Length: 134
View (spheres, rainbow, N blue to C red):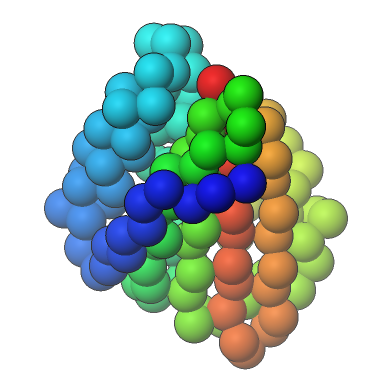
């Protein structure tokens, strides 16, 4: 799989969350994603960017445009240096929240992605990577 483009966007304000949504949509359109696949990627990106800001205290996202032979994709990797997640399995369950939300952010992002990975250590931060393929 070849990375055709890579860029990094800081996530330190609500405006940055909006910018991440825009960048995800631009990359998906450039890769020829259907409207449904664009919406899935943008929705997952929005949830993860908001989590990065709200629970991680801010961080960044690395956006990558991928060419995997016959497949084209977009990978977004969110990272923060926040408090981390003590129980990842619990955090991935629908309805689990440490805030006032619906508890669908991580689990929803996982369902909306073709590939999903999460790494987190309490006190060290969290890294979530999602990939959507066309």
